[in-house]
Image 1 (tube, rainbow, N blue to C red):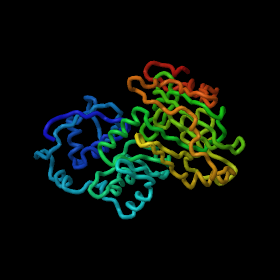
Image 2 (cartoon, helix red, strand yellow):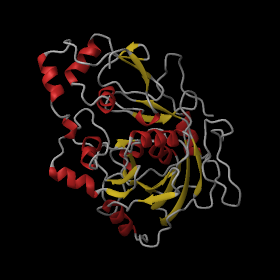
Image 3 (spheres, helix red, strand yellow):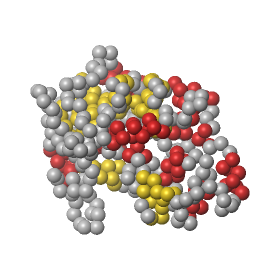
Image 4 (tube, one colour):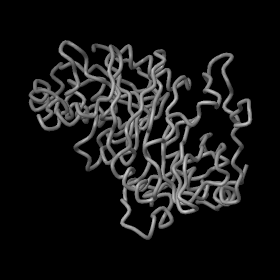
Amino acid sequence: MSSVRNQTVGRAEADMRLDRWFKTHFPDLAFGRLQKLLRTGQIRVDGARAKTNQRLEAGQTVRIPPLGNSGEGDGEDREKKSRPAKQDAVSAEDARFVKSLVVYGDDDVLVINKPAGLAVQGGTKTERHLDGLLSALTEKGGERPRLVHRLDRDTSGVMMLAKTRDAATRLGNAFKHKETRKVYWAITAGVPDPREGEISMPLGKAGGPGQERVVADPEEGKSAITWYKVIDTAGSRAALVALWPRTGRTHQLRAHMAALGSPIVGDGKYGGKDAFLTGGDFPKQVHLHAREIDIPGKGTRIAAALPDHMHQTLEMLGLDTEGLIEDPFEEWEAPKPQGRKGGAKNSAAKKSGPAKPRPFRSAKARSAAARPKTPRGKGGGPKHR
């Protein structure tokens, strides 16, 4: 690259660290060179100086200076540029592992069943992550697969990977315009009341580095909508619940289910001690699984098997794990493209027939939404909407 240019951060790249973003787009750029460009202010985000660990937001503009080797880098930088990228050095054991996760593949897409505990991208103290293993899935003569969406470290289930740059653009646009659907299964502590409906509770980010979480924020939070339906129950003790996020906010499902009064089992971050089942040696992991996903433009739906810890908990609760329905939302209205001319507005979900989801307005959610929070310079907490 011989001139300055600006590049917009895509939706699928939201919350990605700046250094990881550069590694994805410019794999030959040495880390030392990147740091020097940042220190000297040559790389900027929305016109402001940036740091390597800065988290990007969709729609931001990254200023990219000339990156070619013109004598500006030191000898160490030039040596590093000649070496293979560290993320491409995948051990034989890790290569076998990531290949074992693949559940579907075609000319454009790979779908994997990500295990709980595996981070999607690197960060502080996170050296082993999915993004660093993807070179092992590169086909002969093909491109390195690209991430187009993410799952939390503690969430298992289906993830789509783009096999080409063109496929990444198409899939990224499909997620942006709500042209695909992803259904999750969760085991909750307690049974949601009512047993099916819609949760509409705006969410805002809170907490410092390493303690980030989302909270109900009716005034300044981003719209967050979830459709849910109870599949099976173990009395009033626990439930298997299907979740269809109509928006894609960070930790949306975890925060919404906690606000409903039935936190996801194992999710102490949002449910506290109420998120852990008593009376048995239940697994402590978060019981949230991306069960199935529609591949945009192909009419194909891929399902991922439940992880062992969820199977174990279901069996301990006496719930049937064999005859579970595959599509609990089959009669519910499919999402329409949003953000385009003629598309559906981001409002309360609608559908015809007796199974229309009922808006969630429980006392616990009202209490969560109205709970005082740290003022943002104006004084006072959020008001419930």
